[in-house]
Length: 208
Image 1 (tube, rainbow, N blue to C red):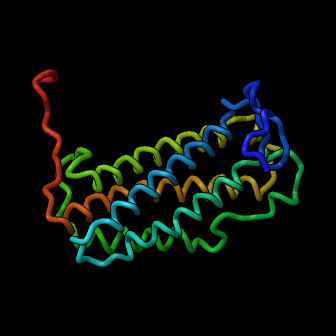
Image 2: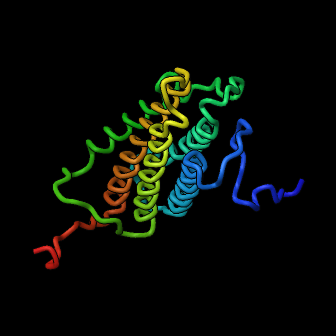
């Protein structure tokens, strides 16, 4: 089977349900951002696997393996036109029992209890490992913005949109929002675990 089809050479593609759209479509962009986020989380895991100095609980990093698959599931749900009428491919409800988001929140709380109180704005940095987590956080925020664009696009979500699609978009938004908080906390936790000072923002003279 060839990896290329040439079907997208004109700047169009098809969603999971077969709906034809342009490649700058909100859904396509959101799924692309989730793909980029997944790649960056892979980089975090690569840094973690090559780092021997972390003596703290490693479950906070191992959770990222699950998160990669959860992000992939989210993309498969979002890559459908909510109003296409193709019920068969829309029967999935993301995080039906709030299992994913509850786990993320509990880990955020656990890490926060070990961290020093946050009193200043933190800049990305410290080392490549910590910076990769911050980078994933910013990609996560962009993905959240793109998913929000889908929710408030009347072409996709309006008074006729079914309850399942509305529930899915709201669950995806809650999850991706909490994930960015998780990544921020994980970056701080990693700095503490490696005994690397956090980089604090200092006001520059240009705005004095």
